[in-house]
Amino acid sequence: MEFNRVVGTRRSIRFFKSWRPVEREKLQVMFEAANRASRSMNADYFRAIVVNRDDLDAKTRDALRNPTTTADLDLAPTYIFWYIDLNYVEGAQDRLKELVDQHALSAAHGWSRAYVDDFLWPQVLEPISKDLNVVVFMGAVETGIAICNAINAAVDQGLGTCMHAFTANEQLKPLLGVPDSWLPVWLQLVGYPAEEPEAGGQRPRNAISKLFFEGHVDRPFEEDPEVTERLKRDGMIQTPGPFPYRAQEVKMLSRMYGLPE
Amino acid sequence: MTGAPDPHRGEAGAGERGGAGPLPAGDLPGELADFAAAASVQHWLERSGDGDGARLADIAMLQRFCGSIGTNPDDLVAQCLRSTRSGDTAISAAGRRRTDQAITAFVAAEGATGRDAIVLGNKLRAFLIHNGIFMQGSAAID
Image 1 (cartoon, chains in turn yellow, orange):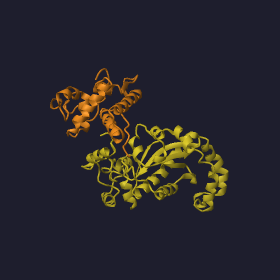
Image 2 (tube, each protein chain N blue to C red):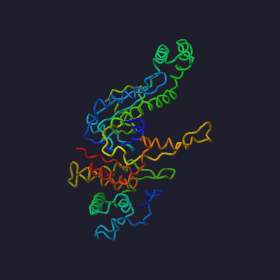
Image 3 (tube, rainbow over the protein chains, first blue to last red):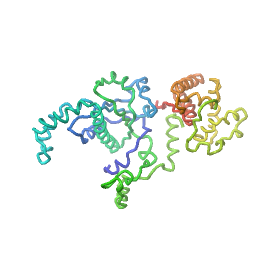
Image 4 (cartoon, rainbow over the protein chains, first blue to last red):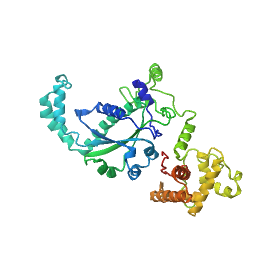
């Protein structure tokens, strides 16, 4: 699938084919995509544990239920638990020098091994690593970027996915062997969509002119209609929901799974 | 509703029909008419009903459930709500839990098992969901 169409086709999928497992190779693609995501300090901010729904007992699955995540847990065959590893700064000094050696960070932009050793590490990064607020903030942002790659890789492979609040960490920690330094971020449910991949149409979004600005917040970034039309052709901008049959689609899916209507 | 906040307050569409739902009480068999006239039942039918005969069975089932725990539909909703110190309406976790346990017990008493049990329980949960009470229904995937 072309990139623009992947972005445009992504939805939060909540009805999965409960009977169809996700191929391990598709998970590998998702993880590799996440691993290729942009990251400051070339640090490994995230950790993730993939678990088959059917390998979790009913009590554990029930513990994962929360005010936004319910039947989804029954329907999705694959769970990915995403964490921030709060120790991500460890090794940053060596990783940055490695980037200097690879000329990814070069003198052209002021980088040198000495700069990393004598200034950046002792005066910036090491102090930051001791500020939990900054560590969590950066960890959340960078982990989110990685998750975004995993989401798009899932969509590109015909999978459906949705991010969910990650609760019940204390129950899961011993079960999954999660160390104390891992902070839970999101539970990603993955499977093949039982609903149409369009899931009733594209969700409402504000115009980019409300969200983006040129030079000053008083100057909205106005759309070029020709670009907008091209993005429609490319599939990034799709028919907005709800499709006329969406309510019926949800009703029939609910009946298939015996869910509340 | 008896002494409870109105869960429909401020909800889009609530009250648009002036209390008349898709299955007006007058169209129902006599024994269900009074029961179905309750605001919470009308609200449920407005949101979820598709007007077919199955709705009669659903209403009758809700009536049996309410009877099994000695309450009426409006109070059933109210029992899942609470008022906060600041006067806001909140969902009562304890009320939800009690109600969910009562649904499970009712389903078992009805003799339903497997998929039938899930469907039956979720029909009752749907009544509460459409009245603003967050309930967690399992899916029948086996």
